Image (cartoon, rainbow, N blue to C red):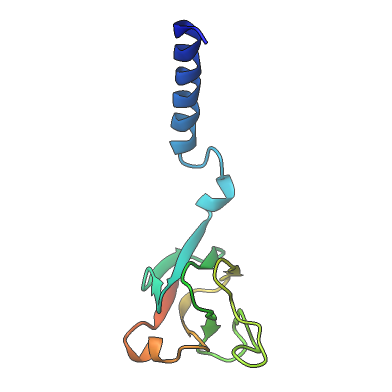
Length: 128
């Protein structure tokens, strides 16, 4: 590979990286949503404010199974049969929910109820 060819390749890679950093360029749908990580025994961020109509994506980035379960029965639940007989939200899995009405929605983990006892109850607040 010649020196000139290396420079052209390097400029191409730099250009691709720059485009990837432009908000909405590669993933326009992600800009309309919000994300929460379930890491170890907490939800991060601990609270979230979004507009009505926003889809929230929860991803289990920890090593233990979890759930994303509304404190109001029937609103949303990633794993209604968790922990027994299961399945629960396994490490690496994701779940989504679209919030349509304004309000504050709190949720907890069915597997680890102590997450809420430690002040790790995570609200999603919807604004109109």
